[in-house]
Structures are given as C-alpha cells and as structure tokens.
Image (tube, rainbow, N blue to C red; front, side):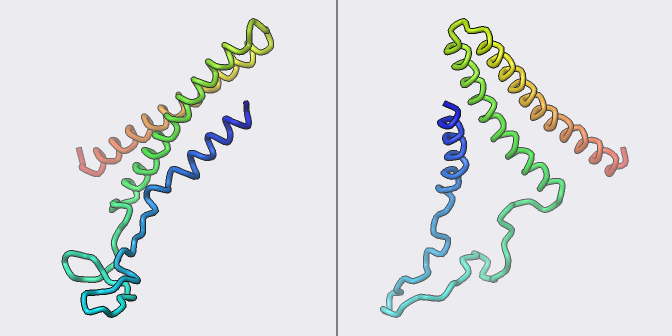
Length: 139
C-alpha cells in the first residue's frame, strides 16, 4: 500500500506540468500564405518590440518569495488532505490491532504537525511582509 501511495504522489508531480507544456513556438515550422517555409522564431509581442518577457509576473524578491510560498502551501494542502484520507484508511484497516492503531495515531499526529507548519509558515510570511511594508512606508 505504501508503494501505491508513493507512486500516486510521484505521478502527481510528474503529470502536473503536462498541461503547461504546450508548443510555445506555434508559428515555427509552418508555411505562410506564399508557400514558403516559416522556420524563424519571431516575437509575438503586441507592441512590436522583441525583448525579454518576465514569465513569472513578479517584480521584486518579496513577490517571488510570496509566489513560491503560495505554491508550496497549495501543494502542502493537497498532501495534507491525501494524508488525512490515508490515515483514516489506516485506522479502518487496523481492525483493533493495538500496534496498527498506534502507528495510525502517530501518522495522524505528524500529519497535523505538518499542516500546522505549513499554516505557520504562511502566517509568519504575512506578518513579516506587513511589518516590512509598514516600516518602509514610515508609519
């Protein structure tokens, strides 16, 4: 059962990026209306200039760290929910065996500790960001 759960979690991390791996160069290797091959990579920027684009949509280190923490919290929340389901399954399948119930209790304890760490990291991050913002504003 442990191997199935591990395989499920690993497959989530492997298969999750697949929808975002669309062909980024949609015009590359196609033919234009005159029948000649279009094998050059051109900019699709509406303003007409070809510059580097920021794919992360962040402008500062604080925004980057907030985005990373938000991603970790989202993934951590999913893992906590899956672990709670798995712990419930362990409680049900223990069938009164005291050692299995003790193992399930320990799994539940560490799942809750992990959830509290994730929520605590988010709370500390928000507190530090608010403090830095208020200090830099001069209030």
